[in-house]
Image 1: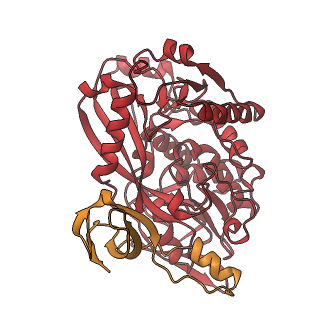
Image 2: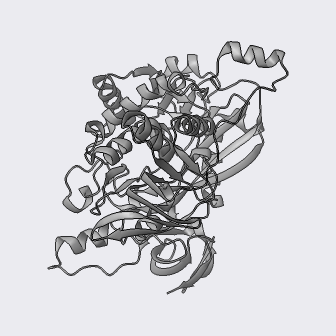
Image 3: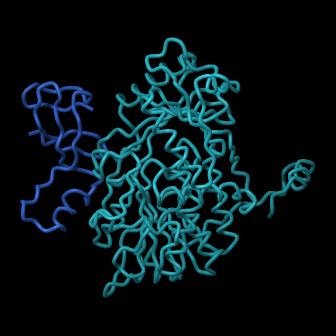
Length: 77
Length: 417
């Protein structure tokens, strides 16, 4: 699996660390249910998903659009 | 047909012509008392216990592919009860005792081999952690023996004791740990359930769950609608998809876990051995292949095949621990789809929809849990109350924060398990 870093170009998966689903973080006054949904509950799609990945060499956080069935990386931003 | 030594002998003399199929592939009826979605180890065990202990006579197992085609056929076959935390500890202890009776109870040879499991440690800190774990296992009534370096060397002389990057300080031996023939567990439960009248229906994919006023009324499948007042979801890595048919969102991510097997070799590894400084565990099958595995790839995946970086990590760990393995050739590698929960512990619970139950979240440890999971899920489906030994496997523990069972102590977050 290769991921295209916007700064460094396509790089090997070993340079990246996955952080999990790209979800909107609740505000400081959000209800406990919203935090539970953010931290624990997942759509967990078999197909296209959006995730946060960290590119270790250049220190950039990325939002990666990826297919969980084929491992194809469709977009990075 | 019952299996016995006499029967094997008689069939040998008669040219093996008297054997009959172990179970029958059924077409679905229009209605059942209970439906179990998923014909893997947990689903088949659930159906067996529904019929055996709870007297439900009209039970169906719906399997989208073939029986035992999922993770029960894709694991590294390890059976153990070396958990630490209340909740997990008593559950896996019970499960191991059920393993020890399984072959008699099912009248089926699952080749359960209690050859001993040795978790190696490589530092003083790890030794302390394993002493603590061993004490917890002993307090639960299970067996644990602390081995020093010489003790490990006596049992596992083939490890690299002299030049290893991470010196071996000792190991925790769990004598009743071991392996079993994984496919045979599915076949044994399928046969035993079928003999009690359970309908085993293959190539029948559930496409919808019918709910009326907060109560489940049946399921839609590729082979038509089937009515039932009780439906259990026992589908491992596909839990999120099936639960979504009932409008549920689960605290589960599906990840791929890889395993490997070498060509068949003469007997060389007599135990199950796990490395303490990397993700690597190994045993030798009765066929002679070295069966070994590592950690999940750490990004969600439904591919049932892994990426090379984790394969490389596993091979590196193998080489640093037992250099002799470098001469063996890997025959196959594969991946299973793990239903990972934030705290690494499972879920057997109601769902908030009457009559709909969930057995999921087995992470990378579902195989050894099969017997107790089936019994607990059957108890829950039949009585609407959790079995006491599985009462902590609650679906709402993440929302409330009460009763989290984080064996690794990393925090209850998806990216950490």
